[in-house]
Length: 327
Image (cartoon, rainbow, N blue to C red; front, side):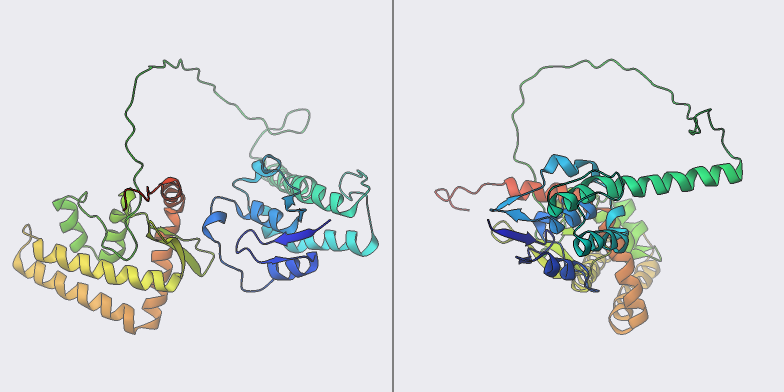
């Protein structure tokens, strides 16, 4: 029987649980690959801590579906590792939370990871909420000590129309090395961007409203992101600071193009705008403080569009190129 542990974020693999644990506890966390983007932090954490036995993972996807948007377990990993260390050190086979007994330590570890530990965190959270409410006297409690919620349920009738549809190919993003598509930004908005004190980030926000421009997937808690390269190479890893640097260069190019094409403003305003475009770009390159601030702002903008960019990446995965027809 072969046992393998695999980090679901970066594909680091080992035959030993302790090695995988050390990997997850490193101060500098590993970067997500494209396959891991669709998982939550807690799902990745659990899938990494539990092994493949004979090339089959001991966790089924439906067992951790309830953690799709969760990161609470990862935030409390030190507390979790204390529990698991006690199990391993003392060869315990009974859950310290619910007293359920197991014949194997690995089964107990799985039980704690996918069930009891998260429930325990939820209990702690509920107790804190109830304590706050009681102390603040802001809400009523019923006779069972539960918070009373008044919920209005609206019932709607759904009418389904059946029709034939000719499906067009799902759109894929523009490669990161190419210029964005700014055709959807109207003239009034373009002028507004050029007159903004925050012209670079304002333009980026407008650009990312077009799904074709969603070619970057960044988690603001990591220093590495993923960018769409092309249909052959798909997505590649890139340092977040390099993504921001390339983004600023592209924004600078687009801003200068918009400035030259602007015909709604006075010449003096256009001239001042051109000077500010240049000054802001130079300041970003030369001033470390400004560089850090811009990195923070741009990363946050990309991070806010992360889920939409992930959806676009699915279109890339599903795109098929016919080798007989060429590309």
